[in-house]
Picture: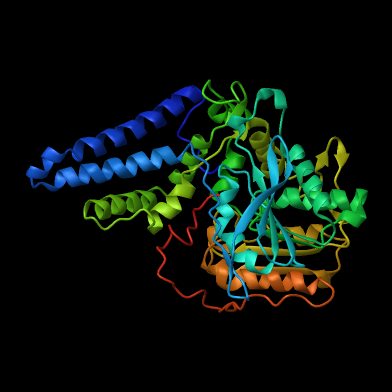
Length: 451
């Protein structure tokens, strides 16, 4: 939801899918043709370049319809053993599941964390590195949202009120010793879910709520995202981007905001960087210097894997969170009942922002602390990571080296009794995290990584 997507309302869902399929076929054809053994007798680099272009193109477009695997590595234990991580579905629902990353043969840890993954075009696997970094120190759960194209129309609607009710159910199920970490898009709805529990079931409230780079008050700081939301009308938005799922998927006939349309917006925000990254990858493969496990493939296998959102979720997010400012002005309702964020009294709240975040700019997330009028000041914390972009505050170097230990410390401060010692991690330096060889803007701290 940044610049206006490249696809228009007159282009059908099946036409978009056909363009993707054709691009994948062209890449496969070029790779196969240029790899024909007879061409080895012609010492010309164009065949290597054509083969490399075909391989990169085929892989890129094929990733767009494949849900990535979690691939969580084993956790090293104090006993010297590697503990395999299993993924259990704790709750199964039509539009999303609650997953638990169970570490085999390990005693249950007292830190219990629910990661609320964004529903903004990518799968919950976008938080894979975040999950991996937290597993040594906590029992980790996550919201795993389903691709709307795979959900039959008979399952009904799913908008931001339904999303909020899912969060309420997940928090209630996990109990009051829970620590919630909401990343970007779900931050305002996680705040609303905590307020609902505070009023209806105070004993089921989570212990802490950490909001990372979320649009609590989008008007607090302008970005391309907020400018787009203010510039376009709801009628124009619905006309230009909402499509009906075609006959290829179980959700045939469901109105969605296609993941491919969202991906076009993401790429448009940083087109030059992405173009250079793909050109460099093609040249590297042509030289025989590329690999399946290089940083480019790791990043883009996740970045290009997109999912559809239900039309009502996407449109209600724009209309009520960005245009109507219902959370920012504490006017949000669920099923016609007002949600008063001021009712939160027993939940410690922390906000995290990135100084270079141009999706949820500094000021948008910290606005949550002013809304939580019932929370004592000593139970509120805020952190601004000066040199971090949007992706870096939850999955990049800044998260690993600086933010993660601060979040764990914040959680521990709210817990009673002795805790497991956190994994030793370097503390934040004013000048930002030192470089670790990662590709700038793409592999590790891409400020344009959408969430």
